[in-house]
Length: 141
Image (tube, rainbow, N blue to C red; front, side):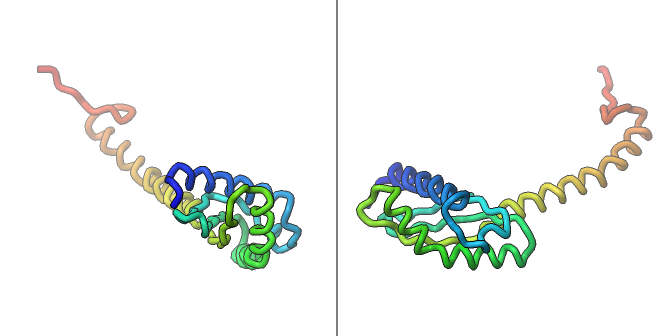
């Protein structure tokens, strides 16, 4: 069983190497249809399995094509990892689509909408209280 430090180092190394393969190594045209980036790699404690989380920017059709291309390229990715990374056994690679960036963007847009909806109310309340620029009225005792 590998230590947590070694597992995280191997995960970072796999993340860097797979990112390089996405830029230069994978020749499948389906992988190029959507903009792909590796967001995270989760390696098991025994270093036998690696889940590679990828974020794909594009239409739903482009995302499906890209995931199909990545799944068909897992053998190539594993063999390249075996030659680039010095491990006793090369981990099994599984690509998983990561939706966290889309969820983050959605949450930010909802927060911006709420802020825009609340601003007119604040200005009306401040005008009634006789304050400017959102400052609250203070009383001196």
